[in-house]
Image (cartoon, rainbow, N blue to C red):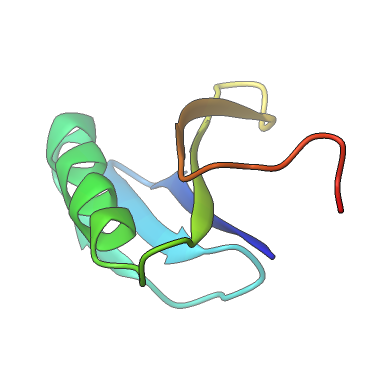
Length: 75
């Protein structure tokens, strides 16, 4: 199962949260939020598949990093 870690704008701050979760930590700079997101994904168990997505100004999300090996085609 692929996990998605989102970085979204909350006022003047950046929130890091797992997809479908409303709560998350906020950071003053986008770069700091990205560093935290990378660390969180790196701490997932071996074999886990995850993406980090950053929210664009139009509200959509752009996949910025993918971690792990996503089997294609799926087994």
